[in-house]
Image (cartoon, rainbow, N blue to C red; front, side):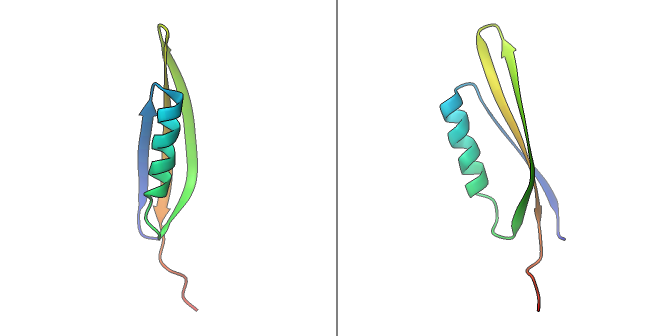
Length: 64
């Protein structure tokens, strides 16, 4: 195993947040595995903020 990484994605618009989350997953390196996604919402007045924390690891290629 090489390294452990985290990536935080946030947004106040649900559609934009989903686009950002999809792009963050698509941008992961080919040698990475997504271990966990933690999701949270927070409200401030009438505004909701959506957050996702991506936890992924870079791994070494499988050798025969």
